[in-house]
Length: 375
Image 1 (tube, rainbow, N blue to C red):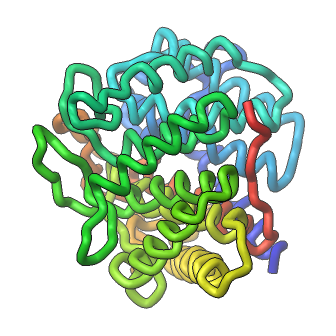
Image 2 (image 1 turned 180 degrees about the horizontal axis):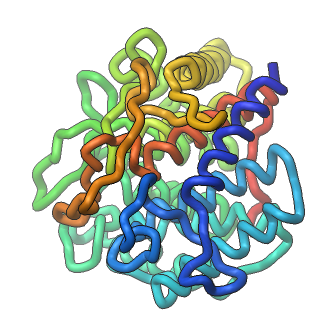
């Protein structure tokens, strides 16, 4: 069974590599993911559209693949992806704390598998994520600079990153406690999106659940404090009940939402392989997390569209993928978020989500906890 998921993850990686990955402006030693396939000219040349946080997840998936099947060629790809992102962004800092948290997490993992140390880059990102903590304003860290929206998509990945640094562990614990005290729905036990000007933004997205699961699982393993494991038990059960009909994680469409379910799968895989303890509740949480990942992955694979022998995934893993077509204009952003293409399968995010899911399925079957050394 491990080999089956390894083969599927390899095919998903090959599809992304063939359709989306290319040098930035033909510069040697660089790489970025073209945000759509088929792509328009400005997408192919990364002029105006390149989507910082999608690129961080390209890097994260390359690290997944390197852990699954190490190679020197992929190691070079990983380093080229980091270089491409830094060049395209003129550094690593931007206005969105969730973006920077995702890149920090990916580079932290990349350093663990390449032997390369991006110490100054990680220190710069760490400073951004630590210094933005403003409990006096109701947070949490905000979603973006000059904003009073404190949300799970920023605090979750930032907390996971900081939890993997010994001297920042106490801050990660505070972030988890803030999330639990502020954003948990008392009825469903799911995670609300955020809080703005003291009012809850009550939307409940799959990826909000995923990042909180990742943070609480890391803290359960690193601190041994029982409250973190109990929160994982509660949230895994809530996701299974409310966000995975028939065991398949709910899709959300294209654009930024194309990554939502896959992020949930990534951190369910962390629960399945990393959550400590042998109490019945610990075992149930791990088994449920594994089942959700594998059921979702089987369904996504079954409903894929083969294109020249490589998979094309749909944004909803319980229905057939649709073959995308060229579009004359890239979808415009909306208040900091990226909208879907007319056919969501065109978006890198959707295909990256399928790859991430296949890597998660491999990881839970192989029993690989995928935890990098502490920075």
